[in-house]
Length: 189
Image (cartoon, rainbow, N blue to C red; front, side, top):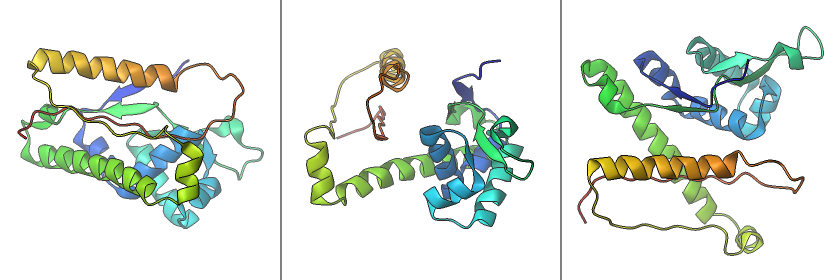
């Protein structure tokens, strides 16, 4: 059975599991590198294996990750993988319950903090790293006038564009992880 690409989260307990910086990072590592052992995840995040193991159990209880026993070479080795490639939620889905809305707001805030931290880390990278990537890294912004329906259409188009780049066939060339994000929100200059 093929796994779905996106999980639409409507349970605040799942968002509570996501609303932790290390768990968010573990999800990213699994997305970028695929199924991994606790040891590999600990190496990639600089965390103690016991800490990683604890946070994987929280993510598993929220049905965000699953064990991948078919990858184990013996009974002691435990591999973990994402249940879905991505998760999405709308804070509006949690409006009826103030506590759930607070959890959704915290998860959204953490998500934005993670996005900004990744961009700041790139900005702080060495001159050699910047030179190696040339004109590839970019930043752009724009003010446009849209209806709510047009913003929803733009959102779908951006998600489809990102998915097209993320899911293209492997042609054997060596590629490095690149983080992309976009936000389209009503605002005032």
